[in-house]
Image (cartoon, rainbow, N blue to C red):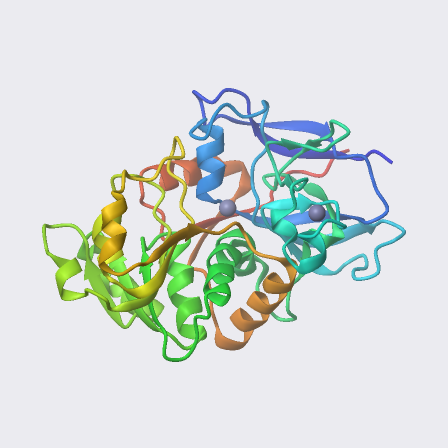
Length: 356
Ligand SMILES: [Zn+2]
Ligand SMILES: [Zn+2]
């Protein structure tokens, strides 16, 4: 069964704010697919990297968006978890094979055959299209039920940003007594502070300047560490942290050699920010000798983690700080992400007129 969607597409990466409303076919329906009538979509840094060709040329025209929230409008014959009308969300992946080692061990986001939510193709050639649109079709393994009473607009950024910061924390045993550093207080970082607190950790927010000080304290951070301005923060905080998460997606903003010194013996640094071009700042092998720390990364999170993350957010009041605007004004959101004025996540409200 084919179905049509309408979405705001970018046709030329040199004009990444020229969104044009287009119609297109959703992927070919499979038995485990869920169709979602989109209500909200968060604006992730990945969307901006994609439509500006920061990570390479995308498939054009490109409908981005992978913080999708809406109502189930149709379910395939093998879907048992969802029914029409359910309030659900989708993050940055939409399909995996379901039977490899990764998929059968709650690591489906690492399935070698996974399909990302946009700028990706299924094995049969169908295009995966994102959430700046009125509808999306997704394998039920990648659809997450939203807890009763949670706001759809506030739930949207949890689908990518929330899960991306939550998964590495729980996989690295962040909990009561942990000392956790969060680097970069933007779309991901402002949610990371809240989840680290919700998990019981003492939180150290690393930020370039004191510009966001009041916000950072309101998010719940226990300490603010300024990385710009020539202060030798790495000496004052040497060996301080058990776990450090960096969300910075620019090379300039990431003083990795100094951050390494703030981690305790055999501690872990996870970077979830991917700068344009994909490269981290150059780092000397000798930088790791001071504490024997580990540097690694993390991709999204599993469905099991997504469900637990949404539940924790609901129970502990973890809430993205959002700026809600109509989807037809997506260009403003892209500009706000590019110039760093966003506080702290744009959420687009679907205002696409229904088709005649
Ligand atoms: Zn994202
Ligand atoms: Zn798999």
